[in-house]
Amino acid sequence: MRVCVYAASSAKVAPEFHAAARALGESLAAGGCSIVYGGSSQGLMGSLADGALSKGGEVVGILPRFMADLEWGHPGLTHLELVEDMRERKHKLLTGSDAVVALPGGCGTLEELFEAITLKRLGIYFNPIILLNVRNFYAPLQGFMQQVIEERFMNPEHAAMWQLVDAVDQVLPTIRATPKWREDAREYAVVR
Image (cartoon, rainbow, N blue to C red):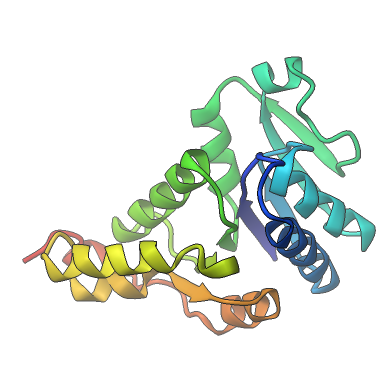
C-alpha cells in the first residue's frame, strides 16, 4: 500500500506533533506501507521520514527543484524525485496513492488536503483520506466542514469523504476499514 502523507515543514511546533509524525512513519513502515510525501528533512516531514526509515520503510520524496536548491531535501530517502513546481508535486503525491493521511500543518498542508477532498468529491480520487487529529488540531476544521454541509455548500454525503482519528494507532485500521469512494460521486457532486 502506498500512503501519501501531507505534513508541515515547521520545526517550531510542539513536540507532540513531531512525536506523532515520527510514530506515524514507524507505524506505516511496520505495516508494510510505502510513504510518499513532500521530500523535506524539515519539521513534521522530516520526523515522518526519519520514523519510517528507522523501521526500514520505503520513503519516496517529491521535492520541487527550488527547495532542493535551498537544501531542504531529506538526504536519506529511498528515492527523492525532483519536480519543476508545487503543482507537479501535488499531482505526483496523489497519483498512485492508496490513501492520504494529513498530519497537522499550515497553508500548504491544508491546500493539499483540500485538493484531495475536492478531487474525491468530483469522482477523480476514490481512496481514504485520514486526518490525524493530534492535540485536537483538526476539530475546528471538522466543525467548519459540518457548517459547510449545513449551509448546503456540500451535500450530507460529502461528510464521509474523510475520517478523523485521534491517535496514530488508528490510522492503518481506519484506512483498511474505509471503502472506496462511490463510483457515482459525480451524481451528487453538485448540491441539489
